[in-house]
Image (cartoon, rainbow, N blue to C red):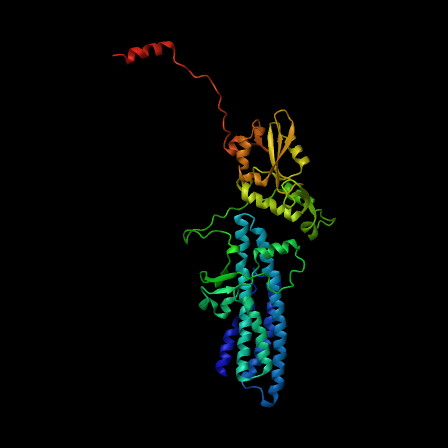
Length: 440
């Protein structure tokens, strides 16, 4: 029995979670509560295995251990629910948004998996220690209650085979093993977005068909499951190479104020979630099925309008956005006022407030006349916006990009039109001399 006790003592050395600043306080509280119940459970198991309980007292003592194991299961379920919903699912949903952002925002968000892995590691370790104790009880004190409790705890294990898997020896045995991983898929995320996050916990698993992941060793920090649909950068050519992370251009205060006003905050300055998820702010013309001309206008909520613009910028306009050539979020009236404040001819590139995924070019020409042009984001497949601004005669007489950026310098210069001029013909003496030059 002393060997059994020493093994359990060694296993329980790190039951309590350390007070690390990167781990959320809710998890620390829940995990330490689980650890306290486990410690009481372990003390009773140690006493029983060490022979400290008289034979006539053992039945009642075993019932006491079973009661504590039930309390421990409830605590584990609560901790599991927090990790799966408040931590992992929240990360996965946010990842869908970060996937259309810049590489910098994606990389920053993706690094949070290290912290999530650590949280699952703590929980997985405590779960493994509890299962180990129940195994000893099943071996030395056979009881249907221990069998039932062991079975219930084993049902939790599949959640932690990917994250926190080293507690089960996966870091030594699992490299290259194919597993079914319960992480959210892109398709599930789309359904959640369409459902505005309502009733998302009806199913324990947050995946329609769990994707297959392969365990891979990463340095000495445990195992991760590699999911192709969550990949954010291609594998560098060399181990020493890494992706170039560029800090994105931040929103100006004017842009932030414009977006906040569109979300209609209340008198206390708070924005309702429904305003972000459901409030219509733009329109999109959609063709009816089997028609090339007949369609109808569809209202677009704020989140869809905003995220589509982020996608358009990332796909077509990233360089211009990063270089400050796109003003961005601005109403038509504000754009006209800004253009009037500039004495020279100038244009301003902005996002349409009312038409879904359209780019607006507001222009003030040399006569002071203001006009507005628009482009579908699909138009940018054929020609980049910078090329359009240089080549289109609508913008030929424009000197600046708001506020004072020389258009030709910023975009590379316009192509000069070819001016047709008469050929410079040789005089008559040249032709007269050709006969002499070629005669023998």
